[in-house]
Picture 1 (tube, rainbow, N blue to C red):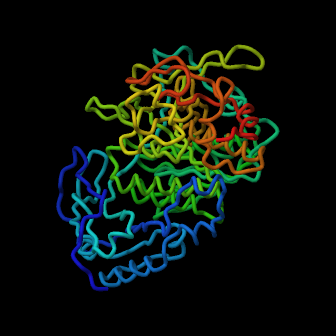
Picture 2: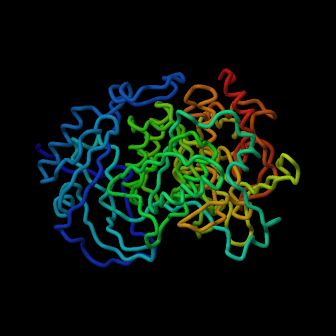
Picture 3: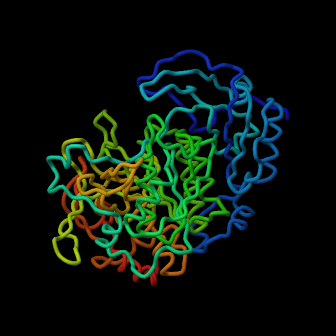
Length: 523
């Protein structure tokens, strides 16, 4: 193809990681694979679907990549000595994988790649914008993989070896089914016929842990399938492993919805890996998950705009396909771990097309059966662990949160979280990791807890609830299916009646939600 002058790809600008030092140029002969994500052939607007769920085939033919646009990228690749890799899913996922030498990729995308040293590990990076020929600029959503810096962190917290923190009311822990009982998850259903997808950006599991854990609970171990994305694999007990995250997600989701199948999508911890894992899970017509749990993320300021926009678009596609995405809201309070004194929310929890999950401290009564004695905002006050929450600076307030304007005047961003659940390590979950019993919390536990609840509700209601945010925000208070959390804070924000930027609408009352969602109010 004949190329005109290149122009910057909007939203692709990168700067070196804080604390990184330049080592030198990347080997020009190093082989790298990148993902070029195309724009939808027709803009997807959920309101136009009027709640209708699309099949994978209908979505691909209506909103997938335009074949003519794909052909343009293929020609672009050929002109720059790049190889097109695995073209099976190009239309539905709008993703074209290109493979080639660094020197050819630098020329193709108008970038310079360098190696960096960073306390978090070495990475290949770029600064400034990616550049594209004018004739491609209007069809490309984003280009991922040139820069492979670590992108996200798992949002789980292990209880300190010494036991509960000074702020803890007691040394308490629960098996996940006990938490489900406290939240009145529907009984008589198991999630049978449902598949829960879990996205992991590191770590892995050993089958022996899963077998032993579920047998200890008297539950038949679920079928757990691993899917490799961009070379990511089930890799337990590796250095800097995130095994605790992986096992927490599987054991929580699998034990509260023991009849559901579990599919774990393992990807590298990069923006490319995260983007591709989300896209593959949502468009996986083989495993066909109805809920996808994500316990990884990072402050919005650490992402490129192209990443956030592209992943939000995938989340919107999930809604069209009837897939509910549950996402941990972060474990570092209203700052989200940013040290400049500002308030920040975590992405992808801040996407307006996902169910963002915040955290509470959950105390059960000493009765039979136990009930909730108290539930407050998770904020340990000492070790820095607290539920994430606040207002997005990337995404505007969605229509389903329009009532927030009255309670939070002047806030125009998407409010996080939507819902909550037990996340305090001091009232945490008993799990088995690499053969060791641990008590773990963090909002990482809440995302798979809600994914399990969605699987139960889907089975009971014989539907795919999909994008439930517009539904749950219209449920009439006070009997709206949520335990309203009104005590505690996450730093800058305090809990109060109704929605708040600590625990959202509150923690679930599962049986009430099942009843209300069976006949949702007219919008």
